[in-house]
Every structure is written in structure tokens, then in C-alpha cells.
Length: 231
Image (cartoon, rainbow, N blue to C red; front, side):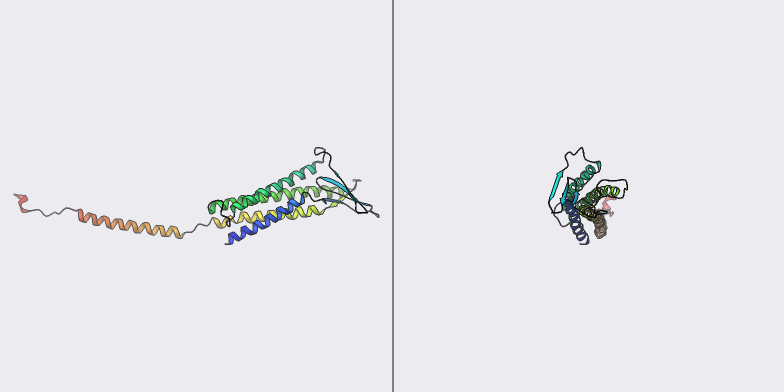
């Protein structure tokens, strides 16, 4: 029961993390223009993995999609690939986890289901690492430009999407680790069955032995000879 409860907790945590990671990809505010050093702010610039936008003082936003995927900066392409990989791995991990959980009726024996659950945990951990790497890479680019005194272009700060991505990645990793540790309870084999089988085998062997002695006594020929045998 403890292992089943751990698997349910791990599945809930992992699915929650995967949903957060999935919601991070289309979120708008990956980076937001900073107000540091400015007295009057007439517009706010923000961007994500797919477009860059500007919002004026009246609240009207104007967005522009990135014109070419191959012309993008390398870190944006890397973040796109990592986040898409994180979403895909989380999807397959959730399906594998359904086959490996003990509360489901698919997946085979308990040992087979334990191995499948451990595989699901590894997949969720990889999903969390991909999301963590993608968000950290994007954040590193923002902080590097922000603290560079020679950088004269528009500077940005960390957006809300990065924190959502980090939270989802952490939940995926925690859920995957719990899935991997749940296999330990399934590897414990009971010993009562072996002791009982051993006693049965001994009793059966003794029965056969006594039965054999009875057969020997009944089939042993008599050693008494008739007196006519000497004539």
C-alpha cells in the first residue's frame, strides 16, 4: 500500500510539473524591458520564444513574429528545442507511468510494472532537466546583457514564464525521483513460500522412504525351505 501511495503522489506531482512546463512554451513574458535608469516610461517591451512585442502607455500591444527560424539567435533555437523536448518527454512519461502504476490493471506482473514505473521516472527526470536547462539558458542571456556595462541596447529582466518553467521542471524531477524509488518495495520477495515448500518436500520424501521399506518387506522372499528340498 505504501508503494501504491508513493506512485500516486509521484504521478500527481509529475503531471502537475508537466502541465506547468507545457504552459510555459506559449507564455508571453519570457523577458520584460527594465525600468532601471529611466524616468519616464512610454512603452514596455517584452518577448518570448516566438515573437517580440511592445505595449504603449495606453495598453495597446503590437507584436511581431520572428521572421525566420534559421536567422534567430542560437540561444533562442536551443531553448525552443529543449522546451519542445521537455513537453514531449513529459507526455510519453505520463503514458508509461499509467502502465507501470500498481493501481492500474495493465502492464503485466508486479516486477514488470515496477520496471515500467522506474522507466517513467527516468523520462520525467529528463523532461525536467530539459525544461530547467532551457529556462536557465534564456535567463543567462538576459542577465549577461543586463550586467554588461558595454551593452547599449534595450535591457530586459526575467519574465514570469521563466519562473513557471523552473517550478514545473522541479516538480517533474521530484516526481521522477519518487517513481524511481518506488521500485524498491517491489523487489522484496516473501520467504514464507519457500519454507512451506521445503517442508512439503521433506515430508513427501519421508513418506516415499517408508513406503519403500514396506514394499521391500512385502516382496522379500521367504528363506524357509521344505524338507523335501533336500531329498
